[in-house]
Figure 1 (tube, chains in turn brown, green):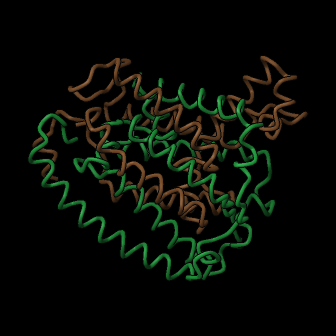
Figure 2 (cartoon, chains in turn orange, yellow):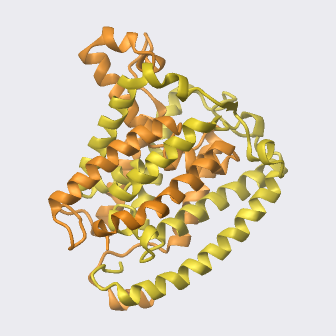
Length: 178
Length: 202
């Protein structure tokens, strides 16, 4: 690849179309084995429910959202998506180590903004993604990717609107990135 | 052997979490290796300097859809047992708007942020902390918003059932749209990269 010559110092990534084919095959395999797709936000939801159940079990039981995910015979952490998300972390670690991107803790940001600004944007972005994924019945993995691939109308809707909204709003936040 | 395996009890419960971990590792590896552990790579899709998200995401969707159609055609998978995400129209529209805003601000989505934490990105850790807070706030507010949350329930409907086009035709349309998008964004990216100097093209 010609890119390798010019950017020898930079991190190297796999070809995006190759990555896409691998991800598509993995999604197909996941559906073949489990009958469901991949996900990510569900693990954090389990963590929230578990935390609330530990801090205030009575409150958790009385809230109709937490109690949806509580069971008397096992912890909400004993959940498919929690183990899968642990896997995401370790898979990222493995790839990062292999390609030389595993480094000491750092904040990545555009040179036009400070690290502090980046952290605020990341934090607020996370809060919004957390809220949105509950309304949307999943995030880019569970709803947009897996939903669309299994021909769910809702999944397709989330995919189009999530990215569409990003494009509409990108102009207002361009200082954060370019 | 016909899929899906776990819903039919061909693989039993004890293996569930081992499989989850292994599939997750593969998922995380592909995300990181594709460049999704960097918010600047991801946000490039909105500004035209890096379309890696569009390339990986759309290719994956198309491969999985075509694969699923093929598996169904060959009789390798019982499609009735494959989970179809339910559609709650208004709630999902609003959820997507909120996520879209979160995406442009944060530069990550949940899955990609886990891989970025793994390689040491503090901003990804803060993003995931935000996810936790966001889901907590949503849960606490749930008694007041549950009416909206459950409104317009269309059930586990497919694109076919709502739009009336077959899964095969829908896939074909997406493939054509995908090819046009791959070509068009390749042209845009080339132009934008000429003027954008501070972002390193990795």
